[in-house]
Length: 297
Image (cartoon, rainbow, N blue to C red; front, side, top):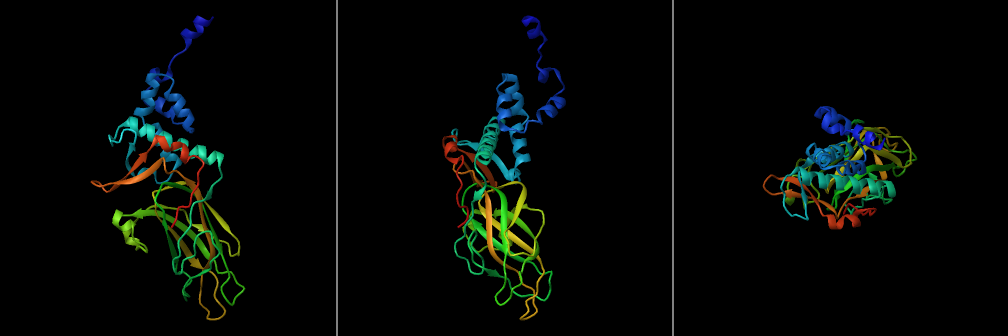
């Protein structure tokens, strides 16, 4: 019986059409399953690598993953643009994020140095917009991120009352953008103008409540942030101030949540192409798991 059972076993990857095999393997959503699949045999190992399943899973898991020009495994030091390197780096990135996210809740990864008229993240410091007669005039807050690679998962905002009023001055809705400076030189500048930043991620537009409470906005999927800038767009005004009849927006709290993937993973600009490479250092992977750090100056 054992011999007959052994003879009945077949490797479906070698018997099915390639497109069908790829479709079946695309249902692997756990990086651990990819590792197991690539360990079945030499054929399976090559199939997983040649079809870029680890990279495809990263693209499904993270927004911003498609912004990388290529990957570098720092144990070899070279950017060889090989499928093997892509597999190693993207599989490790998935493992680092999933391990951290499953074991540790999203925590604060953002704090600001003092910037006039902008509230520091995660601190109680009221910010007041300029008054407008037109309720459709938006307001924008931009925060500079520390160097490093992060996965943003959620942003919290709390509207507040203006001086001399009991009314809450919230926006109608809010939208978030994440990006990086178009050149390394500009990345060192702050404040920075919109035209100097490449906004690589734009969130959906979230409605805001007219309440003096912390409002949580969970991003549809984690967003890989390469350092750079976080922009908060406050869209539409609701409340007029009794004193002058103008529309205002007031905030007392902003907090960005997520996980830090550095120091095992970093993003560096390729000088020739002006695009980012995803750098992976296997020796530092352990120090990235479960560690959450401040991400904004």
